[in-house]
Amino acid sequence: MTTGLTSTSPALATHYPRQQAPTPQCSRGRGAGYRSDLSGYGATSAATLPRLDWSVFHAINAGAATRDWLEDPVTLFGGLAVTLYAVATIGLWFLARPYGELKWKLACASALFGAAVAMLANQVISRIWDRPRPYVTHPASDHLLAAPSPDPSFPSDHAAAAFAIAFGVLAFSRRGGLVFLPAATLIGLSRIALGMHYPSDVVAGACVGWAAAMLVTGLGRKWILRVVVRLSSVSDRLLRPLWDRLPWLRALT
Image 1: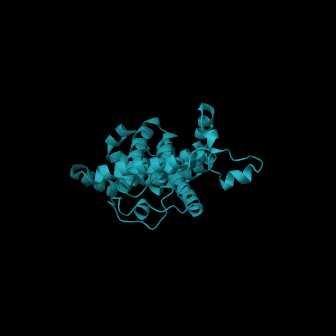
Image 2: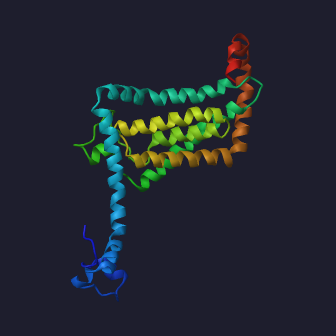
Image 3: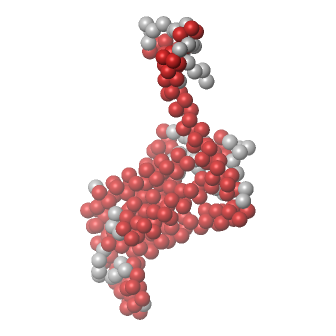
């Protein structure tokens, strides 16, 4: 990368056609040196972000892959986390007392619909920027601890769905959100540790998930309420006998 104003960039020449390229002597002195630093600031900042993204990825991925006591738990968590997270989300529906308050049912429905919206948004974004996975771009440095995926790296589907669920639950229950948000964070970190995503992929997925949850719990709240009321008319009749036989369920709500 060329710094300073001693070399003429075609882009600069086009943008500033009347500006003359300074002579080498102009780079001397405090004022010229200050201008030289500013001229390369944009290029340096643009190059720093991918470098930082890779550095954080490599630290997390290599840290998990090169430690046997950490690799096995991370791999196990990566394989089970999504399934357990989905089961926990659906289980919120069963925490609601039949013919009682709809809070947990609204949280469950909003979380699931938010995840669906987030996944659709990810499909659109990935078609705009088809970013290769880390193990494709850096095959010699990436420690792949999971089965490879043909999908683009940006943004992370796992992070988008997990955070959409977490923020959807948080919109109706602070206590539930404080459980799901740390779990979503761990899922996002595990995708980096497994070598599947860059940190920026996970951050972008979290942002998509948050936006999807806000959309569903904001503009879609009335529609979600109608869906929950209709489904409750069926599920409450089926779950009422279970609640009568298992009174300890009431202590969880």
